View (spheres, rainbow, N blue to C red):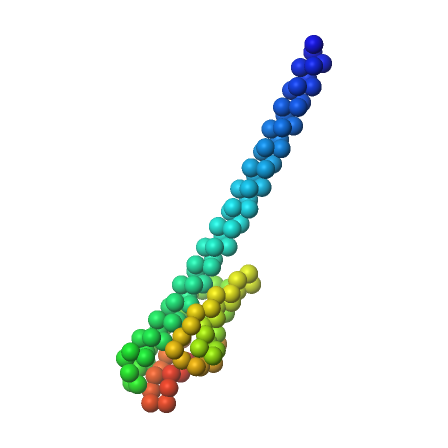
Amino acid sequence: MRAQASVEFLLIIAILSVIFAIAASYYLGYSFRLEASSSQEVYKAICRQVSAEIDYALSAGPVYGRSFYLPQGNYNVSIKDYEIIVTSPGAAVVCYTHINNTKNLVIGKNMIIYNETGIYFS
């Protein structure tokens, strides 16, 4: 009778261990997806910020100059062929813009200038 109880106990422990392993792997996968999506949102916000600066310059007219700042982080921002591309080691986000310009922006202070010849970044 005691041998049967110990076998049943071990069987219950094994089943509970499998259930725990499945639950733990699901939680870890969920947290990984959540972290990836939150970093995507940060890069989308940076892309929208640069797009908004370009739109402000276009709406203000050909006598416009303004400084804007990109937040600290591990990413690159480039403008090329009507696209704003924010790249990082694990993701890339693309926004579209109204200008055909080629420039790599820096993290920190950037200057946008709109004059009679076009929009420039420095």
